[in-house]
Image (tube, rainbow, N blue to C red; front, side):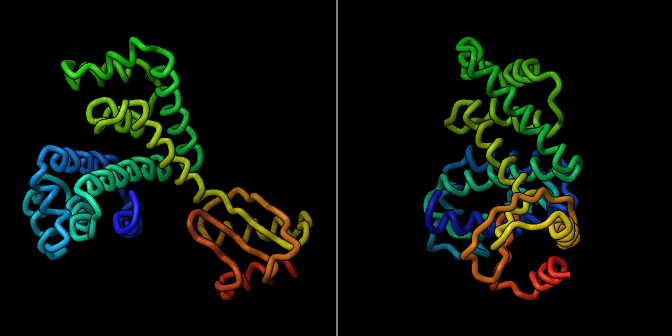
Amino acid sequence: MAGVSSESLAAALEQLEPRLTTAELPLAEELFVILGLLDGNAGLRRALTDPARDGKDKAALLSRLVTGKVSAAAEATAADLAAARWRSARDIGDALEVLAGTTAVAVAERQGGTAGLDALEEQLFEFCQIVGSSHELQRALDEPQASAESKTSLAFRLVPNAGEAAKLLIRQAVTAPRGLKPAELVNSFIELVAKRQQRWIAHVSVTRPLTAEQSNRLQTGLNNLYGRELTLNVSIEPDLIGGIRVVVGDEILDGSTVSRLSELRRRLAS
């Protein structure tokens, strides 16, 4: 995904984030259901990605199809996507898949923090390892004549200790891989977990090594700033302008965010 589609996905992820603070797994399930609707209707995909069509009109079209069938949050998320611009008809489905996967990952994060994300990653990775080591399993999960129920049952037997978020993502991968091998799609979900894990890591660049006291103060300041227990990854960059740069997830705090860094600098200096 590139160009305008990449920009639309980034905007959709930003719009989704506030909903993730209270989201439960049913939201991810509903987004996958809407994805199935799109994948099964080429005409609908073309209508929703027609560059000549007004965004509000496209959003209204999708809303009419799903109203009463999914939650308001799922409808709003899908409508946001429909209103955006897409380079190809395939891209809107790929974006919805990312949003659904991100929602499932965020639920694991909200329920278990870093431990929840680590557990989800391990469970998905275990599935990929087991499937990757057996051609027989790969054939069974790829068999077009096998029912969704039988594939799901087999997949769950491979990872009996998987949590609910992992089960949802694995079930989606084996029943609707969308042209990929199931393990390939699960690997893409693992990438979403890794991206979410970056929200818990503060990559800190400073001009000189921090003392233990400075490090503790920086840790406290960042934890308070982001409202979570971050892991600090500190590197030394003698030529760094401004003395300090902090990267947490997609957010960069540097000389352009003086107001937020001033408190951290004060803590380090005191």
